[in-house]
Length: 399
Image 1 (cartoon, rainbow, N blue to C red):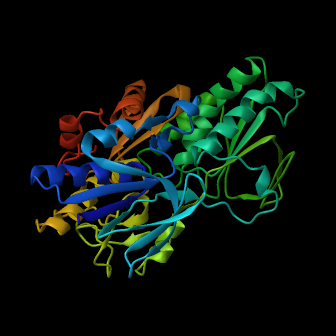
Image 2: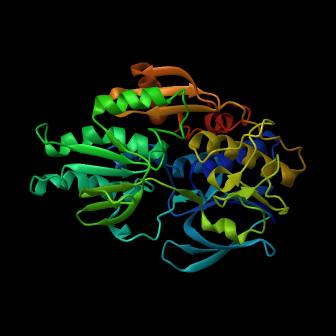
Image 3: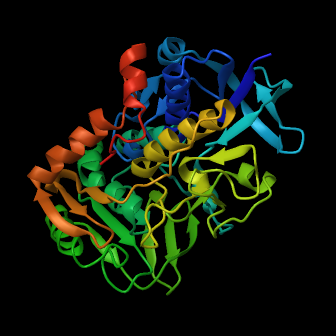
């Protein structure tokens, strides 16, 4: 009987794990190991783009790609992991419980936005999953059917981090497209930081400030959203903002499946892994993408929850899980280069390099790079076996 590699998740970490495992097996001419990938849909959803309009187009079908490289897709949602029995229980497309056994597991189930237990949270939108972002898009388009009012014309974005900034800077254009150029629109970012983009660093902050001013974004600092209702938000400092559209962008956490694997987790729920991306203390479980707490270098930096890191983590995890089964030496995960390319809407973008975010490109030049990243670089390869397997080499730099 063939040995079995099971991958949970069809995000960046899962897809590239599957391709990389197939690459190593092909390289060593091994047909005694099979690869399965379990996910609700055979599609890579391009999550970094969900702040943009036309979100329903931001996915890439995977069936032909998996067929080309010999990966079996299993449609379903994982419910539980039994590491002792090496078994995963899942619900198939019909909702019927089923099980899969494995010899090696790659957990690449991703992360979710952590919605707080807050009064009125049911009124909040987000751009975390494609269904959520689609619901927001439909809401924005329907605003024109409401009477003209400050609430209708105002969007409040809770959180001034990466997702919050990209969502907020895109919003003026989206509101004008929905409401017309004469509407008195407002986009307000509420952030508990003491200054605009406080967590982003001094190198990138001036561009964010300039873009905010040019786009008419307002920042309310040193406070947070305390409650939401159908008419707006109340802030922790008592301020009231009338708004029909409140978007939550604060707090991401690894998939709860990580809690079913014995191991050390970081505050975001990510499993600590060793240099080969094996979960520490788990001989048969590897982790990739947003569920992995992995050192990127020897300087104390760890992978962020981003496609930039998930792609490389997937390539190494897939390679190493296959190497483990066929007796080949694993590769040490290393990703010392870190970049930031932050979309700033119609104003442009800003591109930095290094964990200290050294400014390299700004404005339209950075925007062109961001568009290249979003529309080409982060998409999966063509459904051509040779091309796809070559693209999965862990030594290919992501950024």
